[in-house]
Amino acid sequence: MKSLTSALALAAMLLATGASPAPTAAEADAFVAKAEKDLEELGIFAARAAWVNATYITDDTDILAARTGAAYTEAAVRYASEAAKYAPLPGLSYDTKRKLDMLRQGLVAPAPNTPGAADTLSTLLTGLQSTYGKGKGTYKGEAKSGNDLEELMGTERDPEVLKEMWISWHKIGVPMRNDYTQFVSISNAGSKELGYVDTGAQWRAGYDMDPDAFAKLTDDTWKQVKPLYDQLHCYTRTKLNEKYGDAVQPKTGPIRADLLGNMWAQEWGNIYDVVAPKGAGDVGYDLTELLAAKGYTPEQIVKTGEAFFSSVGFAPLPQSFWQRSMITAPRDREVVCHASAWDVDNKDDIRIKMCTKVNGDDFVTVHHELGHNYYQRAYNQQSYLYMNSANDGFHEAVGDFIALSVTPDYLVKIGLLDPKAVPSADKDIGLLLKQAMDKVAFLPFGLLIDKWRWGVFSGQITPNTYNAAWNDLRLQYQGIVPPVPRSEADFDPGAKYHIPGNTPYTRYFLARLLQFQFHQAACKQAGWKGPLHRCSIYGDKKVGEKLNAMLAMGASKPWPDALQAFTGSRQMDGKAMIAYFQPLMTWLQRQNKGKTCGW
View 1 (tube, helix red, strand yellow):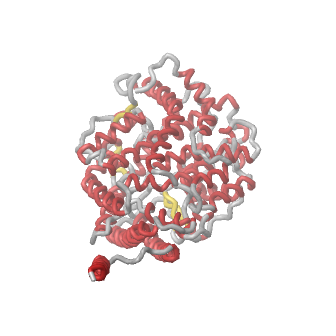
View 2 (tube, rainbow, N blue to C red):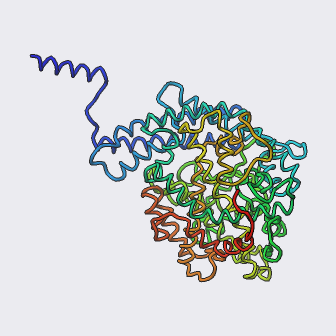
């Protein structure tokens, strides 16, 4: 009798708590199929609303984007939570297990399962991005958009004007701090419900390895390439000191951030004229001048990027791309000018959003953004959760790898550069230095953005030290300092799009390394025998065929499988980048002999 009473009590308790029998593998399969169908439908609608908001910023489109974003987030949170229930089951198929993990890891800003949380989170993120998009700074007292200031930072050489632009733009972050703090709290609560210690750990879990092991991988690869960065920093600082004098840029210590030709000192190529050494520094041509001389338009730049991909065997872009993309900045409305590539319907509605200007930077950026679009189209036969790159660094690396083929040889082939103007071998140091000012200079910045966020999400960096921690990391990794003292009244991270836009950034660091692995492998496949930096795969359809095979895999396999499919190696490292820049490394060491390097 006692046992029957106990059994009845247990049954009553199970009913009261809503407990149910353990789910089965077949139920997990059905759950994944439903999740993919629902999320794809919601995702397409949310993408359309986000596109309208990004290309036509108003209070109304802010609300529409926030609502549709919230609907997608709520569904994704619901499915992520449920996926956690199925993930430990025995007997799951490879695809179901992988997709369950993707559902748990896929949200970059998960909301907890509390009423209104998803709506609040979406509203916060939409507001942060709109604050950035509407942001203005000044140039000689005149109000300018962020896009215009970015371009002026590359050409202005008066240190006082550079300081004005830097200070005025960084003011846009100040009103973001409270919203950002609230966003971190809500997102962390969502991540904990999914079984992660915080949102940063959740982001790192998406790399087919333990989150801490992935953090170690980024540190290890940084150590491989840091000696090259240190030499470049030392040389650049010397040249800035020669130009501006000790009062503006001392001979030793960190570099003043606003002198490096970029609002965030993330890439230094715009000050190549300052650092170019006599003789060796003349690369023989200026891409911006070549484009202007040929009367290029923004649309022609995009057509040229398309032609590159066509040359290696990819089908032309659909007509809808040309009808629906935003290639230049509209004159009659606010838009988010930050360049991005869009896949609206997971089939053929691919687009770019850029405020393209006719210059060398945007010529390269177009190749990069189209790399995203061609990747998106290559994997459009995969199921919804596999419609992504092998890891997010792959997506960024593909376009950058293509852009490495923007060599003098390529420019001759497309009629931009006179064959007689092709720089001779003695100009190679100039060519490599010009590239390193962007590619190598970027590495520590690419690493520290998420180092800061991982610290913020983990609580190691608290709201009352947000700005100090940001500038400490900038000093530690980049060896730079702001042009004026900063305090916690400032929120300098907000002046970088990817912080208010909540876009994980480690992908860009990985992309800087992967693109050289891709390039080295492609040039080997093409039978290239010369220096790696002179190789262009333009016109090589065999390389294009092998590249497309990797792209078409999407996220269906762990990233080492995809890396191996194209390069033959399963190990991501910095060796290919070091090999590419080895002649420059040797030269920089000679130039820096006797100097006090480091900061």
